[in-house]
Image 1 (cartoon, rainbow, N blue to C red):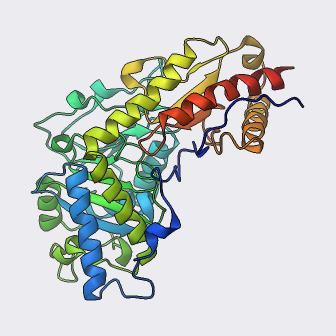
Image 2 (image 1 turned 45 degrees about the horizontal axis):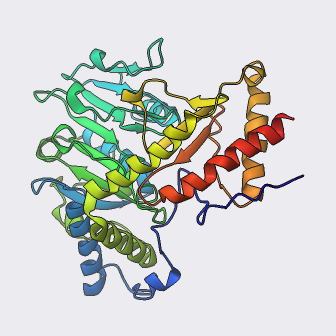
Length: 384
């Protein structure tokens, strides 16, 4: 096999989670981690409180919103919101990718909420935003990472809604701005937009969500790890002041802390977003020069700039059976990984056979520019 002499990306970590570490990251950055120390020690709590404070500053979270760390990354954070807040009103869930369907399944089959409706993509593959009933509690994934769809234009969310909006903001947080005034209960983690390690999730509650917690008791028993109220049923203020329900890795907390400091030095959410857009622009401009591949989402208004999904549009590829398309995608990605130019860029196996390239703020535009000719080489090499 003849390998071209193209320059390789300095950091080939283009996978959509866990994502590339912040530029310049090194193990040395974790030297001050509170190894073998309790998260409930004075220093441990101070370190977690510093994370919460930086989170609020970097993401411009309103002062009257509550922020806490929970176990289980974004999945644990999302489930925490469901178990504590749902059940009072009818529920309507948007499902724009496999994760949206996962949340809908849990609400219907685990919590067994009968007054539940599901809104999937319409015939054009777009979110049915106009069908949202804001008398209900609304569940949605802001950035549907396995389909490349994003609903970042918050004008579809009613400012006079009666129900709560419960948002899975994974793959959106840190990469794109979050419209806090329209988000009542938000969940995300650090391993996407900040490239930190997995294991800890974030929940952000608006005053409306806090009011729900204080005045409503769900009809189901809540597992201890998900519980946001005390044994007396009162809002657990300590959880939102850095006292976690169970033991986190303090090495992970240190990694998060360093990533947040990097984000603050860069310029907080606005600067992070600009890096995402610059990265997205590299791929968009390259697509204008080739004919065999395009965005999976044809409508730019709904196209994610962070989880950029690309489909092979060449007629010979479209003629393949679904399994054969996936086999070719895997071979394509394995070829690039073997050359150390791109790791983990195939789409989720339960989604459409496509490429998925992370363009969040920890990725450098220069590395994406170096990747593009390698994509072209891999395509033509395998097409032979």
